[in-house]
Image 1: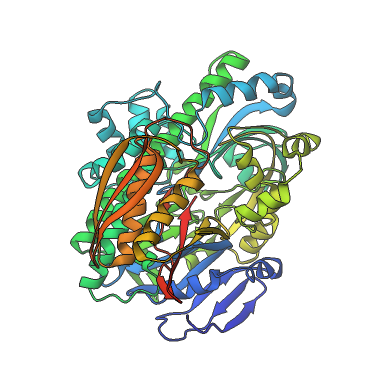
Image 2 (image 1 turned 30 degrees about the vertical axis):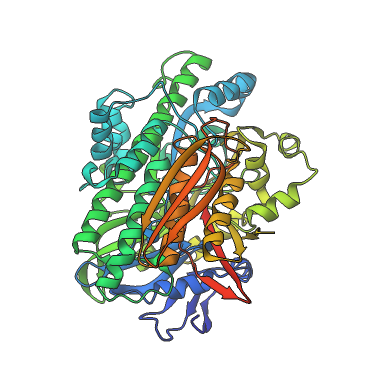
Length: 480
Length: 133
């Protein structure tokens, strides 16, 4: 255990001072409300542990939705020099490219409400969800599956599941370059192939929201957001394929870390030099799993668009169903960052964090170049979510921001607090309609299991990392 | 109790104990299957699992990962397990059960190495394993 000494820098930042064997400081984005949530678990030690890894550039960062993970904390961001730094499967997590996409509609809540029962039950029936869910209708053969792993959302567009226009609304155009399906084990393919086009279980969801309040008019106009509008969020990832890829490579990296004489404070931080054979093999397998996740979300969006067409009539284009953005939460990316006056090539790990590019960033497609990248911040199922936009201050986080509200209660504690309660009825009283494949999931996902997303957004805004554009409120959802 | 569940903010932990290291592997397998809803009282199917690792902690994770794969992907519902041979770097065991296809109650993404250790205290082997849910 590292002896931790904390120092509040300003109302939105807390530093963990450097202490042996840390190579750098820790930096946690937290207002006073968030700070109180950090007392619960071992998360600060995890931030410090990441700071011990070789080649780290800048501080070991933690976003305000941080909570106890395994190895890296959830909400952790760390950049490692490509020259002498590491890549760690545990720094990405098991659900590689777990992420969220937001689909806009041209419909207002009062237009959707009369058909809500039919819409929700159709979505529940058409989008496979729950433990071990598979999708036989969208099954692909082995050769086609390799193309999914190589091309991600581009595959879905090529096959006619999505319009070409969707690609500009994806982080990295919906495809991480460098994927090599041959680096993915047979076991991983066996686990993942039947699950393409499925939501899964746990905290994965499909949610219908109404834009309750526009908080920044100009950017909202640019994004195509207006008050009363119905928008849809989908949260899922690479399913069993990603889980197995991570499994396979954590094991490899334990031996590799020993060979490369890397000292690990926690085995789950197993890693290898970025440019080593083991490091590059993991990256190509991880990119394949990330591409599976991009395609998976795009197929779910296809099923949602089909369902809306069936319920409301007309084409999805006529219904104004346009992808706002799709971003990764769990990923390692090769990026170039400015550090101490020089441009440095890094392998940046975001585990439970999202990229946040500001207005003017040349990496953005024309659609977002002027206004900045949408940053999607899903909250819990009873309160609110936010649509934010990257701000100039994000340079200090290597253009990273929060990914959600952040868990507060353990699943066990959430279930304990749900005992004897009718969660569906409680939600219905708030005019929120939910369907779930499992009652246990609903119990684990009660609103109080999460931090108040407003505190997370307040911290990001106050620190100048991202700006709130709109607050949206859930009114219907499918939980896994 | 051979195992108890412990709180973890995002995931779930299981603290397992047994009077032998082999017993620890076996009880951990049963605990994992319990959490998944993947147990069975019957079945004649027998599968041999062989794993290699850098030490016994690594072997424990690999053993459990194989069992997770058999339950989740192959549809095995676990009746019993036994370790046949265990060294510092190799494990050979057998799992028995039935391919019933009975639906699972939980999805476990992975068995993690987070802060994993095997302690030997007062003739009891103890470990705490965090499962990614």
